Length: 460
Image 1 (cartoon, rainbow, N blue to C red):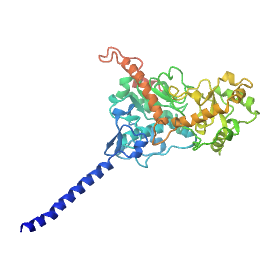
Image 2 (image 1 turned 45 degrees about the vertical axis):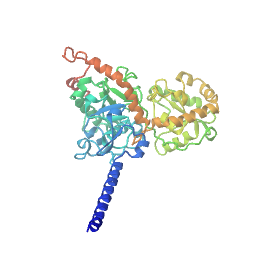
Image 3 (image 1 turned 90 degrees about the horizontal axis):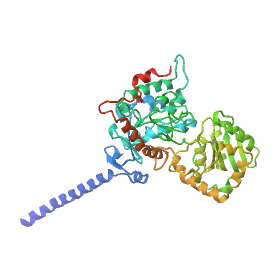
Image 4 (image 1 turned 30 degrees about the horizontal axis):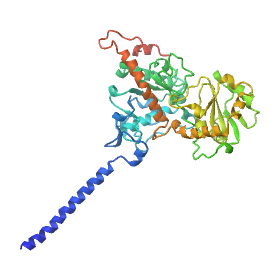
């Protein structure tokens, strides 16, 4: 009987042992499935933490903590014909960027000023758990933020809605600027700092054409200062951001010195206004020089394809001031690995506090460039070895000028966040100085625009 009882207990013991093993094995699989994917870590996913919707960014380890307004869709993705969905991210104000629901940005020259689109996507990714390096993280508490981000797609608004459509008396772009000013003036975040910690995107030279004069305390993200008075914008408070290049990247480029038959290349508009008069002077100086391509061109037809082929076949590419001090041509040159020759006395270069442009560009004063023979003598005096060093450096730095989603470490999006982060100590100083007498309201600054003064001073 004892032997029979023991033999009956053995299957029961085996059953519990197998069940325990299965339990621990399934628990291991569950934990493993919740871990951060190796692909994200390889892409630079420092500071990631696991949430219910996937890996999310940890504000405690981010270089920049950003409070972003939940502006109505008409100010951002609505300009891309995206329709808000009920519920979801931001109560339906924002698209879900974790899957295939990211609205597409229009191509062509629209892309060159698309900075607003890429930065906003990266902030949404940091909150929703989509892939991102987590350089900047969206936070919901404005008091815990380093800066306040204003997600108005000003460049796209100008490109699409700057014309007056009858019977309206003003363009939709100007109407959006009015509504934005109205929105900001009513916000406690604005009143607390007078806008000094607000980041405003106005990369197109004509973006925020009216509102810029009311938003002067803010940190502007610009392509240059060509159309901004010093009282509104300057390097001390603002950030210069690169254009998004229009020509494609030159992947696996092995076209060295001897593989580029054209010595000097320029194709674009020759007769320009403002500082662009120098293009015309250089055209007459260089058009008949040997191995120089200097001609009119545009993006119409196959213009982008022609520019791509021309830059890839050239050793040096001219980047000359036009209607504004800067253009996307510089960044087209960089991704084509055609050594840029910059002739624009008023240009400001992105990330120049951390990048030495003299290692991969040649910068010439306008007064020297128009001297007969000066430019050709300068170029012909550059050795093959020096050119190759600059060519190799171009291939190293091009990643810093790349806009993409998902963003990657040290691409243009992350470089911009770092540039803003370097402004934070100065921003805090300005805000703290503004608050000196605010506790007991013994002094009210006359610098901070009020909602009523904004409305009174709006252009008709």
